[in-house]
Length: 287
Image (cartoon, rainbow, N blue to C red; front, top):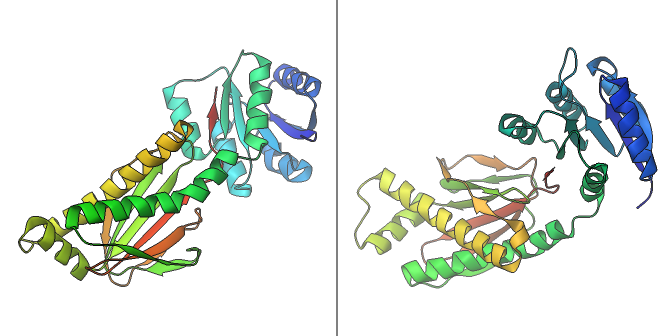
């Protein structure tokens, strides 16, 4: 790996010096330093570092506020919190903001350089997940539709979903949590959903809520099975699903500004089902 450019943000000159000397000994180049929010963005834009180390406790704007501002200035910024403070609350806030790593002081300085290198190294696990993701979710949908409804499923290839998609009527979105977070989108018409309920319950649906519950449960099963399949392939994925959210509208436009969604249409006896899956590059590393 070529020399890594690091910017250090800390109000303590001693801490900045200690981190700088540690990283220089490990082959990093210190391209900029800032002691407060006042010089943060100007220094960052001028030195364009690969990594920013960020203290939490600083006068004026703290490390969380500085991190938010830095990521708003450059969403690709890679920030590592390096602070004596580390508890559940600060970790939760750091993850919510999008901080890439969190190292507690004092610690083995080898940890810090390893976190830096891991963040900057090509993520082969992510590339593997992208290669396997859509096919695995297709298999999970096909298996469970066939098992539950005793009907066949085939798939029609789609271009990558990069701009927007207009809902057929009932859209379920499930968040995926793990080494790489992501989302699964499943969309079908109300007519198709009603037909499926009738087959599954052996009677017409009683009301709209019953149909929505079926749609949510089907999506939940597909996502859960697919994540389990991927975890069996490589336990480092550590994937799990969040509760489904269901939206109803025939003219809603779905967009995905932060995820590259791979998509397909499942052709079923009941109608077409849109299936989209995407994962976010850049896992968070915590030590």
